[in-house]
Figure 1 (cartoon, helix red, strand yellow):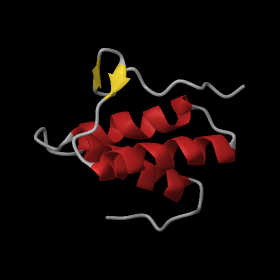
Figure 2 (cartoon, helix red, strand yellow; figure 1 turned 90 degrees about the horizontal axis):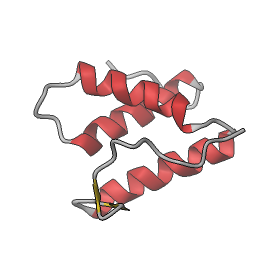
Figure 3 (cartoon, rainbow, N blue to C red; figure 1 turned 180 degrees about the vertical axis):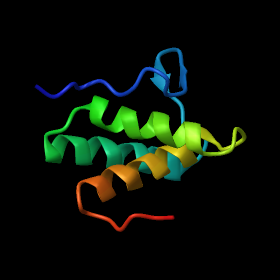
Length: 84
């Protein structure tokens, strides 16, 4: 069964997702669409997000870590080359 809820630590205001720039909402949308299309749940992505946040400098913006995590998930699934 696919969990239909994104991670709870996503920035929100009054329960609604908050994006600082259009690219952030696109990154979120790409992630959600990929998870649905591949039959994976948010837990599969969340593990990559937590690792990306831990690996990147503390001042890294949230959605930059989000994109790194998506890249890592795609690489794990064989759909993207692994970065450095």
